[in-house]
Length: 335
Image (cartoon, rainbow, N blue to C red; front, side, top):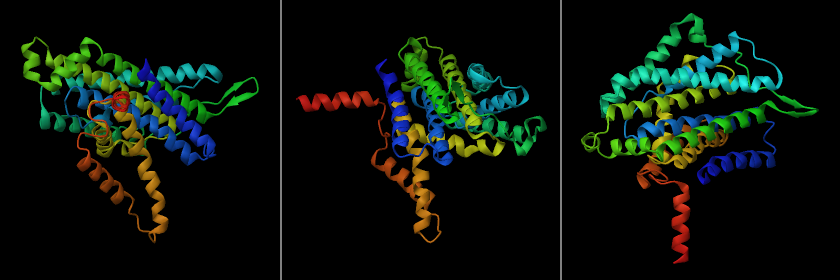
C-alpha cells in the first residue's frame, strides 16, 4: 500500500503547486495538468508489455483510440444524467471503453504474440494504423472530422459549495491512475507477475518450466490494452474533441519513450517520465519568443532525450522503483 502513496502524493503536489501559483484558472494550464494523467496511465499500461513482459509493441495508440471513440460515441449519442448521478455514469462509460479496448487487445494479441522482436513491433504498428485509417473512413464515427462536443466531467453542487469541472476531472484522472497503478502493482506481485518476468528474462527457460508463454503474453497484452482504453476515455473527456489525427504513430512513439525514459520495468519511473514528456515541450514552447520566432522547441526536446539516453541508457530508475532508491540512500547514509 505504500507504493500507492507515490502517485497520490504526486497528484496532490501538482494541484497544490498550481494553486499556489494561481494557475488553475488558466484553461491551457488545466489541460496540461489533465494530460499528465493521460500520459501516466498510457505509459504504465505499455510498461506491462514492453517493460515487464519483454515484448515490443508499437500499436498502443490504436487501443487508446478505441477507448476514446467508444467513450465519445456513447456520451454524445446518449444523454448524460445530470448532477451527482453523472459521475458513476462517466466511470461506467470509461470502464466500457477499457473493456472494448481489451477485447481488441485479445483479438490482436492472440495471433501476433506468437511472434517476437521486430516482427511483433511491425504487427502491432500495423494494427494501430488499421484502427486509425478505419476511423478515418467510417462516417458513423465522424470520419476525418472526428467527434466533437464530447462532454467534460460536470460541476458538482454540494449545497452551495460548487466543485468545478476541472477539480472533478483531476479527481477522475487520479482515480483511474491509482486503479491502474494498484492493479498492475498487485498483478506483478502475484504468480502471474512472476510469469511475466520469466518470459522477459528467458522465454525458452520459461517454456521449459511449463509456463504457457503465449498465454502469459496475451494476458499482459489484454490488461495493457484495457488501461490504454481508459487513457483514451480520459483523452475524450478532457479534450472534448477527438479525431483520427489524434491517434497517429507518434502517440505510440510517445508511449514507448515514456517507458524507456522512466526505465523498463519501473512503475514510478513511468510516472516521472510521463511528467517530463508532458511538461518539457510546453516549457520549451516559450523559447520561441526569445529566438526571433524560430521554433527550436522540438530540437532541444530531442537533444535532451538523446543526452538522457546516452548518460542513463537504463532509464531514469532502471528496473527499480523510487522507494528502493530512497532505501538505498538511507542505508548508505546510516553506514
